[in-house]
Amino acid sequence: MDLLASTLLIAAVLFIFAGGVKGLIGVGLPTVAIALLINLMPLSDAVAVMFIPAFVSNVWQASSGGNAGIILKRFWPFLLCLFIGTWFGVSILVIADPDLMAGLFGLVLSIYSALSLARPAPLPLAPFEVWLSPVLGAINGLISGMTGSYLMPGVLYMQALGLRRDELIQAMGVFFLCAVIALGVALAGQNVMQLSHAGYSLLMLPPTMAGYFLGERYRKTLPEETFRKVFFAGLLMMGLYTVITRLIV
Image 1 (tube, rainbow, N blue to C red):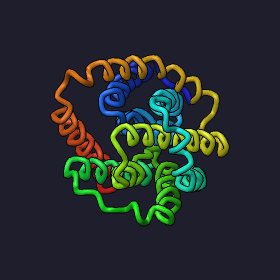
Image 2: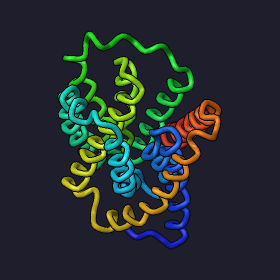
Image 3: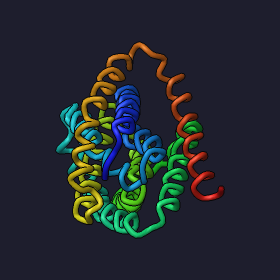
């Protein structure tokens, strides 16, 4: 994989924005980065370039708070099946039509954005957690491996379990960290992520963290609800645009 200097500059600006979104609302780095990067490179390359920035930012989020051990003990079936599903998802990514995979990413992005804007009342899923966790973990891993986005359905599932705000933020951090590790293992193990990808991914780390800390700094000063609506509306439009251009037109 070889990228022009102009492409790298554009990618750095995109990662500043994606890191800022992550700092502001705690989610969205890989989703935003991939949604923008697929206009510059194939989806498989975008997923690989996203790896190191996503890993570092999620280590930061997962380490905040003191409940990591409790979270791992509770959600290990979800996380284990997430790893398995991710491997099979990347196997599909390797052989599938690139436009089809990009269109699938756009569809996942559209569904997640629409649900985030609508904010439906969460279903009472806690009584079914024992068997639901491994099933949803496998589904989440499969989607993550095929698209590079690991938000669905894990984030909605954890929101429906009634965790306290601080527990939810750290649980999502642990979930995101495990998801990106699973993705990295699968990408490297199946030769999707090569040394050149790792180098470009490392180059994107400084702009990502600069954006992250700026977003974190202004998290309490900006009207988060207004930003959230604009952000998810923008993601919805990007998702629909990707579906239309990759699957329909």
